[in-house]
Structures are given as structure tokens and as C-alpha cells.
Image (cartoon, rainbow, N blue to C red):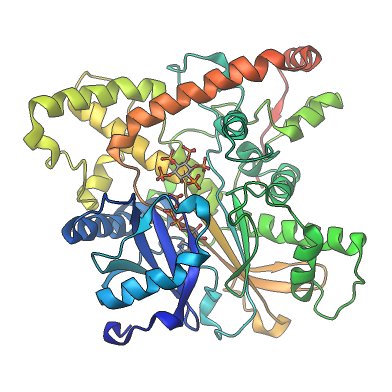
Length: 491
Ligand SMILES: O=P(O)(O)O[C@@H]1[C@@H](OP(=O)(O)O)[C@H](OP(=O)(O)O)[C@H](O)[C@H](OP(=O)(O)O)[C@H]1OP(=O)(O)O
Ligand SMILES: Nc1ncnc2c1ncn2[C@@H]1O[C@H](COP(=O)(O)OP(=O)(O)OP(=O)(O)O)[C@@H](O)[C@H]1O
């Protein structure tokens, strides 16, 4: 990219989260990702550069090892003319959702990350003008804590996402709770995955976005009460799934298209398109924790229908969901078991503050940092080294619990598809696809006390306001089915 010739008119607002703001190039498949900070809390250019360098290093040296080379795009740092950045910031300001304007885009340092535009990433370098559909999913935590440090029994039964939904609705973050449960998506069981994806399509919140040719066509922008218009979605998707216009419009057509969409997402999520170094590093056998969540609407429906077998087919080892789950499971002690270890590190740092850099708390996130993460031992010998390893593993797990998966699909003709390219078929179309992971910024060490507090708030709110009011019949049904059989078989 020729930075001297940067023109803000060639870029447009693309999206943002709590930490960064993304603009995309109008023609080329690249984005710029800028850091954000609260007003009047600007970091120095050196601090921004250091932060961005850490993000790139962490992607390159750590997350690529966990997820695989092809899934992770670590990007590169770019220094931009300050005038361009200021003009760009002014240009995109009206596009920004109000709820994200509590933080400002960094316009003072001139540094940003340059990444491939994953919503338009053409799998296998096909022509850039090809139509492309992209589904972004933020799956959140896909397992129930198995740690003996957990103090409240409910945490062994109901997943954090499902409990958190109630607090979020009470706080006004969302108008309605979602029926999505991450344990269904991560189950590897197609029926459960379909249910999870349908629930995301019903109530996208910040867990689902759909882009067509790089433009957001489905998902919440600014509205906590955003309405899911499946007819409108089907209208957008029809040329992808029924190219020869074989389907008439109407509710049947909409349902069919949504079903096809769910099918391609499921197939792409279960596909294995990469291998990675930490590939065989099994954090915990998936069967160790409970593989279903009592609050999942899918599960409740089964129980209501007197079904006692809840299938969890397990995920294929090479797929991105499997890798994400393995990385999430580096949280082996739960925040309740981790917090005392964090305090041990804190105490040590109070005594020896100069040790902070040797311990690599704030980087560098290099090969040495990665190597230290591989010790999965749970035997606490009382050392700072043990505590630090668990703290760093927890930070990786938190990162994997908050990342997003991008699935880019492009229609192809039969003779265009070769054996090396993964292809997914629907009744009337075929797609080549790519799967990537984004937002792999390592969660800060300082966020651990916040995690500890939030965990308590989520659980206490649930116990007080939801579980206490739950239908007693339902609780009895669960008790009867407590020993339900989990059927695990390979996909
Ligand atoms: O704590 P959670 O589970 O609510 O996750 C936060 C996310 O909320 P969510 O529940 O996904 O709507 C939250 O997402 P939103 O800003 O709500 O879209 C952020 O991703 C936040 O990360 P960070 O602290 O800004 O790096 C996330 O915080 P971390 O816990 O990952 O630090
Ligand atoms: N490389 C990319 N290609 C296309 N879109 C991207 C890319 N990176 C980010 N985005 C879009 O920008 C949005 C915000 O980016 P990102 O998730 O990295 O922000 P964040 O502030 O770090 O998020 P969080 O709130 O989870 O901390 C994403 O949800 C995605 O839609």
C-alpha cells in the first residue's frame, strides 16, 4: 500500500467493537484496524505502536500455533499520514453506532493494523469481483466449567452465556434473551448446531453478522431491539442458493433459504481446513465436563418431550470450532481457582516490580512465551512460576472465548472445483469457502479482577432472579434425567 497516496474517500466505515474500529477499502480486499480509547485517555504513539506490535506478535507466534496457519491472519502494522487519519475519522463518524461512541478512534499516533478483508476474502485467490457471502459468528464459551474450584453448583449445569443473557437483558444491553447456547454449537451434533444457528438468526445480538460482497446485510448495528427480517435476508440470499430462480417467493421460500444457509454454515464449521502445531495438545477431554447446558432451549425441549438421550457427536479435530474450544479449555481452574493464583503473582510483583518484564506479563509474545503455555500440569507447587503459567493460560482462554469466526462462501461451477478446495453443496448450488478467526487480541492481565467480579454478578443474578423462579416441574424433570446418557461418537 502506498501510504503517501492515501485518500479517505477510498475507505469506508466497516465495523467496530469495544477495542478497535475497522474501515475497509472500497475496491481492494483490505481493512485498516485502529485502536480506540476513552476520550482524554489517549495513549502516546509509542504506547500504541507497542500495543499493536503485541497484537501482531501474539497472532503470529501464539495463536497461529493454537489455531493453525490458515485460520489466523495476523496482519501488519502500517504508519499512515496523520492528515489522512484525521479526515477518515471525520468521514466515518456519522456511520458509527451511538453505543460505540464512548470511545474514540486513535487519530494521534498514525499507526493501524492492515489486514485482509475477511468478509471479502476470496478463497484460493479467485477474481475479486466474484459474489461473496460471509457469516461472522462470535460463538463465546463452549464448555461448562469442570474445575473443582467452582463454588456454585449452578455453574456445573448452566453455561456462562445462558446465565449472562439474563443479566444483559436486565441491564438493558439487549431487549430479549437469545435461545442460542454455545454448547449446542460446539456439540458437533448437526441437529443441535442447526438449532444454535437458527437461534442466532432469530436474535443475532453481537454474536452473528452476515455480509454480502463486504456489506453488512444482517445483524445488529446500533439497535438493542434490532428486528430479524428473514424475508429480507432470503431476498439477499436467493441468488446464492437458487441461482436459476427456481423458487418462488413467500414464507416457504424464506424457510428453505434459511435452512440452506444453516446447512452451509454447519458444514463449513465442521470442515477441517488446517493443521496446527498445538494440534494434539489436548487440554481436556471434551467428555470431562458436562456437554450440554440445562438452560439451553434445545435441551429443555428434549426434556419436555421425555427424551433422555442428548447427543453430542463431538467435533472433528481439525475444525476451527474444535481448536477454539481447546484454546478456551486452557481455563482449567475456572476464574474461582485462578483468582488466588493471580493474587500470588500480584503479591510477587508488588515486592519485585522490576520482574514484570522478565515474566513477560505485557509481552513480548514470542516463541518463548508460547512454549511456557504448554505446561498443562495442575499440581500447584506453591511457586510464582506455576501461578503465572495458569494466569497466562487463562488469558489465552479468555481470548478464545471472545474471538469471532468468519466463514466466506463463494458460488462455484462444478468444473471450477478441484479436489484441493473445500466445497460445500446445497440442493441447487455449490460453494468454495474459507474459514478464519478474528479478534485474537490477548486479554490484559489487569482484566482478571474484573472477570472475577463479573462471574460473581452473573451467577448471583441468575440464582436470585431466574433459578429461584424456574418452573418447579422443569427442575423435577431435570432431576429425573440427571443420569441421561451422553452418546459420543465420531463424526
Ligand atoms: O465478558 P463478556 O463475556 O461479556 O465479553 C465481553 C464482550 O461482551 P459480550 O458478552 O460478548 O457481549 C464485549 O463485546 P461488546 O463490546 O459487548 O460487543 C467485548 O468483546 C469484551 O472484550 P474487551 O474487554 O473489550 O476486550 C468482552 O469482555 P471479556 O470478558 O472478553 O474481556
Ligand atoms: N480483518 C477483518 N476483515 C473484515 N472485517 C473485520 C476484520 N477485522 C474486524 N472486522 C470487523 O470489525 C468488527 C470489529 O472488530 P474486532 O472484533 O476486532 O473489534 P474489537 O473491538 O477487538 O472487538 P471486541 O468488542 O470483541 O473487543 C468485527 O466484528 C468484524 O465485523
